[in-house]
View 1 (cartoon, rainbow, N blue to C red):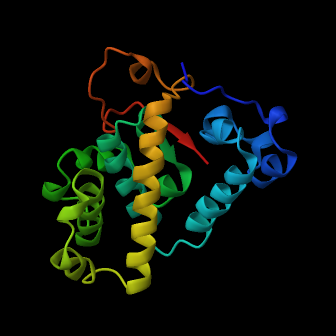
View 2 (cartoon, rainbow, N blue to C red):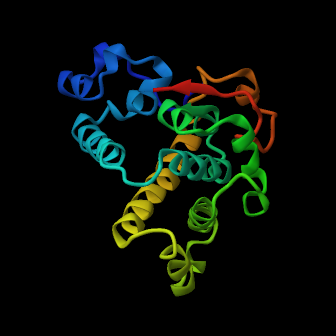
Length: 197
């Protein structure tokens, strides 16, 4: 059970509800916004930022989703691990590819750019101070300066809010394996996922 009270859309600030299309979204698609709605001013700003990251994205959807799922594993965010976003599925993400995240640097089905982004995201999530000039020089082989900034903002968003989501334990709509408190360390490469818009 969630550790923060979940607010139903009819309890949200009307502007926030409209901004996030809450009335047409499933509870899982409403996600953390159901808790953020307790603070509508901040929630509106966060929705605008998260929306800008997605709408103005220049990085491939598949790459972003792979990075998100690998970070979700390190965060042990159950809802983050269970969700697959439709835009990434449309861009070629499938469960075989997600299984590559168990050992991404050894995977045959990941591009060099995806491996570089995954290594960056993993370092950001586990030992951010290990990221150095060599890391960025390696990333520049695949990404422009603007894409490096985009990748950094995206990874920071995933690490920070994924950790917050993990502490809030929002699991009500997830498959059973993600609801088991005795499950130990979970992974996104388990073939029990839910696609959302």
